[in-house]
Length: 301
Image 1 (spheres, one colour):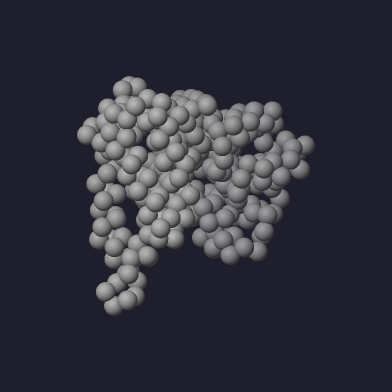
Image 2 (cartoon, rainbow, N blue to C red):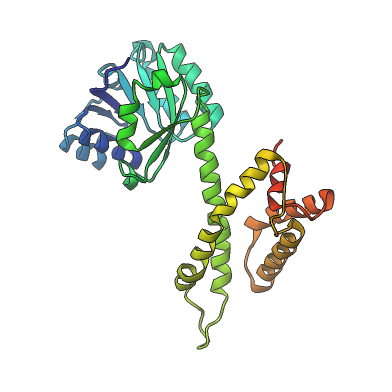
């Protein structure tokens, strides 16, 4: 079981810096490394008690557990490939919190094992840097098994609520990206709505303020619809796509009206057009009495 008193941190972007400060607040002995030593984040962590080490191989060798949080998976290889012959990774525990795909996580686990790493966990941080170490922060973790995870849980839970999602090292990335897909889908629809609202002319001949309409109407509307996600998920799990009073044919007609209005008012509705096409395909191929969740069956390849 890995000792948790000494930790190394590789990568000091906004998120890495937030992780580092949380570890220091948690009374951990922290050694840090960053390609750019002059970054203000390095200074802030050193001032808070971290030790900056310019030699990456020594940084990793100095601790049984190393946290990696860099831009992407290719960057991990760019910084680690030059030190492979130092055997710094041998017998180490790696917690990789770099954003990437499930395949990248699985391939990274194999590469890390080839370098002698004994435990590799891959994680997804469901928080912004300022949310780290608050009740709003959660961390998806995957890889190894739950017994091995217990050796590093008290590190991860410094940053947020740890959610172990399976032995597949790609599971954390999959869950992370699935939630982000939902977030960006919401943003795409909301921004299209805001563009339409910009076209609404006020009584004085000017245009209405979007913010008041979003806070007063759009946000409450979206919040009221959140429970519908669980109903759609149940339909996907069971394969029974009930309309729940909102048949997909009716919703497809409504979507076409949105697209038509966007065209008429001068708003690019491209972010909605593909989804509208899927709705029409369900209606054409399977009838219009089912629920909108049936669109999900067209997404699996």
